[in-house]
Length: 555
Image (cartoon, rainbow, N blue to C red; front, side, top):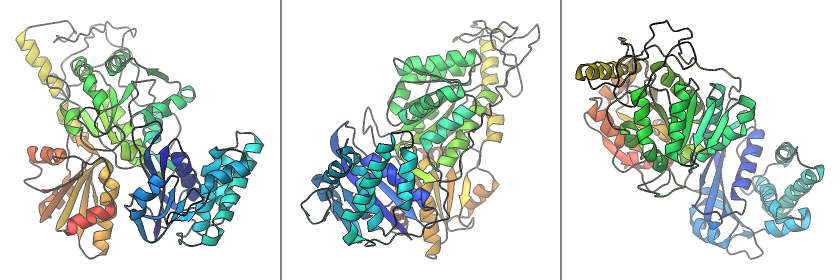
């Protein structure tokens, strides 16, 4: 079983703080956790909510309805009370019931802890009580959370949690909680997973002009910069950010930039520069709805075509799109390795939904394990930077390493000197594009979940993994054989034998994407992987849920 707790209110009211507090406490209790957020692009005001879904089995996506609603404003109560599940409970921070259970979290925080800031702790205590859970794990999590604070702060928060439990005593056990124990206590989101993977892979320069939702990765790397010896530079704009990592890569420093769609649009000339100079740059593009500023704090899968075709001219690149925090960790490292092995730009696509979603799982490896930079340590005396190679990958040396490393943004000969000789041009362009063959051979095939011979096959990529995984399990449990193919690498494409057979056997193929036009489905058709398919799209800025996909597959 599972329960969905929704905390809703205005920006600045502690919605996120309350949600994060519950995530940590539930995970500590051994429950499976999946959290997601919806927030408006305002520093204060508007209406935001934070869902914490808990279960006795692993969870992969959010839910549309809430079993327990904690409304911190009247607006939130009115807007979301209609999304309560049958038998659900609504709690309202106030003295007037308004059709909900009135529990004065803020007033109780002032009276018990001396500050309205602790209303989130009061609310958390109330939530635990409504779910019929003892406060032990919440109290233990508060001890850890505030261990660096003065002891008085810890005691006040413990008192506030107990006060919340007292306020909700009449509702104790009103919503049945799933069983506790067994789930991992460690909690992670994709932002910290990407950041940790980059740090442990040996990235030494990170640049960005902050932009939601990519800023979370940039902020994480700033937080671990001293631990891993990283220079974190907030550039004056995205053009400067990409040119900085191009310079760092030329000098032999592993570097990455973080941005979102609008910022990446400014980076495209720098991406072309990396293509011509054969520089191993790595860029995180965290997608959000466009065009232009669009919905800056919502989610989307609309930038695949932008990233695949960004830059003028033709040059190889690799694109990855994780579906979970664990995949984000693995694919970030792989993307950096690919960039350096093939001396080409590599990208990782995330989005607001995946960046913010928190789940519990095995602790990620924090040890420093630098990737192979594929740099020639002692180049020969006749070294030339862009020497011909059947693989397309020339020996890479860096300045100051005993060789003259010549480079230019114009077309160049093997030694790196500018040329307009058309024969040299063709030779160099063929050399660069020759990398695609070995890159494709090493590309990750999609993951198959569910029966490989199912008549219905769902194809998805990136953050739609979780909702599709949940839908696949639900459909199979209902006696409707359904398979799922999730692509974690979007370019170059290597379908693999098992996935190819699943596609060939399927009578119905549905491509599920968070965009209007089915961008990935179009690529699959263009590459001859699909001859046709149905599209299931969503582009309102909100994520898919497993239950939504089930309904739409069955309709």
